Image (tube, rainbow, N blue to C red; front, side, top):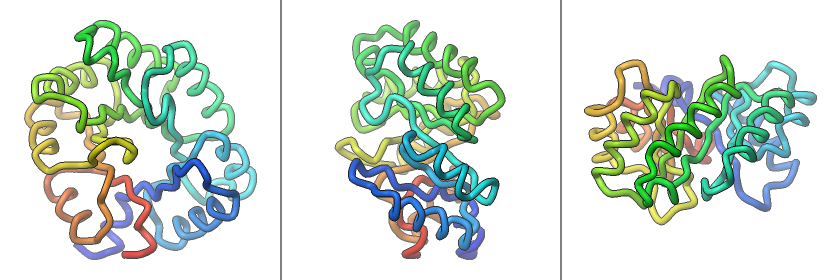
Length: 212
């Protein structure tokens, strides 16, 4: 797999709290040059990116990020505003508090609400694997599948750990075949990206696209 093929699967990411507009311009220009799958950016920059770069770049943004414990109504509003501003893809954080309380009906209900709000836009559900037991990860695979999300995503990149190959294998065994996998968190080399893609991931979330 050559670097161009790898980059076509990368969501080129800048989600730091102190990211300035110059950082976002650089990210988008790199994404256009490298032909990455998208840029993944804070919601506050979506409309400005769309105005500045038009359709030159696909815009992915985050919802309930990074903790996931926003109330559902707030997340739905975030999704609606992001789409209005021009986002193409939504990466939402599942409510890990509900997961830990084993209130799985609430987890699934929230994802269904956000799926409805997102409409035809790509929806990825971040489950933050570093905080979950194997049983919880397995249950979330089934929930994400039933709720109609397009992707299950390993991590925000802001947790205690990022993507792990053992979690990709677990996802592959338990998600519906139509659900895709995004690995994120700590993936910084072309070799690591290729390894995750060959393991079955469709997207890689990384801030290191330009460096590779």
